[in-house]
Image (tube, rainbow, N blue to C red; front, side):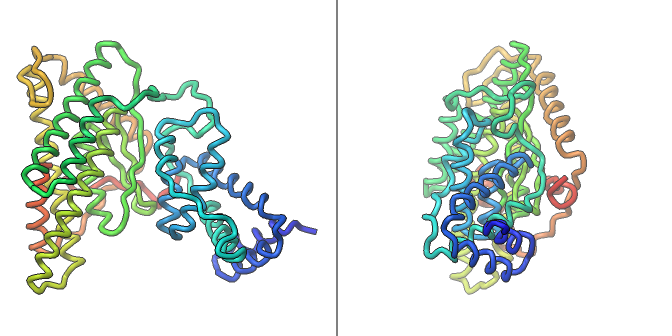
Amino acid sequence: MEPVIDQAFAAALYSDGDAGLDTGASLLAADPTADAELFRRGEEFVRRAWERGWQPADVVRLVRRDLDGTAAGLAAGLIVSETARYEALPPRWRGQLDGLPAAPPRNRPDRFSYASAVLGLYRLLLRLPRIEPVGPPPGASPHGLHLPPAHDEPRMLTRIRALLAKAEATGFPEEAEALTTKAQELMARHSIDEALLAARTHSKEAPGACRIGVDAPYETAKAILLDAVAAANRCRAVWNSDLGFSTVVGFEPDLDAVELLYTSLLVQGTVAMTGAEAGQRAGGRKRTKTFRQSFLMAYAQRLGSRLAADTARVTAAAEAGTGSGAGPAGPGDPALLPVLAARDMAVTDTAERMFPETTTTRVRGATDLDGWTHGTAAADRARMGGNGPELRGGRGGR
């Protein structure tokens, strides 16, 4: 006779309706001896996700978006258990694991509800598409792969993180502007220092990649903001709208800077938008959605030019040896621009190999003038473009 768990899987995982889930959940709820095998099968589904290019944060983010928080916790529990079997994990995985939600207790609130949630999760995991890998899967041989060195966070990134945290916390726009500008200058200076060091030591370091979630609502504006932050920090961002993330390609120090600054600017922009919206409501306006969308579009577009200008200013100062306010002035380095150009070319080549079929999306215009005006003003206060972000060709898989 076919094992109960196979019967449950046959009913629940290969159909789209709720009836199959109910049938499978009923079978599992009636047989407590299947619990251990049910969990083991879940670890297998997670392992297959790694082979298809997914990472822990990607899986949990998609599960939460397409199912709910309970399912995200179930996925997190499987991920923690599955990854415990490896002696070493790929770069960035430890930070992702530390940020996972707690797993809910098994068989709560009852066996049927729990089994139904697990089967819904497994149905989603089974259908995950193959995506572009941004690093080796756990357990892969490191031979021939570029792995950034494992070390504590550089002091410069610690300073940048502290500046951005203060910018998010302050209630004074002028102070937030000064703090965020200082953070971007430090990022640009750090990127230049890393580039020159790599050139002088003949480093074989190659560009890497990471994925950053771009969540609804207003994901188009958020993707444009991330694209602007990436471009200003010598990276390329490619947005996968179907799966809700952008892949950012660049050298490791620059990837760290992009993730830090994007997250902070999104927080600052959301706070500013909420405040501006409250003023609009007090005046009797009701068009909340159009106001928010226009606000964030303007915020993202304006920041693109501001960020680019800040980076250009720091680069010019470094080349001339006049200092930038981000570090001590040096004698200038006439080789700086060729070094940076070579790194830009390496990033572009890597991005084009990873994404040979990208498209440019036409962004829907903003329709709320007040939202656009307030968003532009907020971008100026944050001190921190183009036609739009690149889109992954197709529907998110190879």
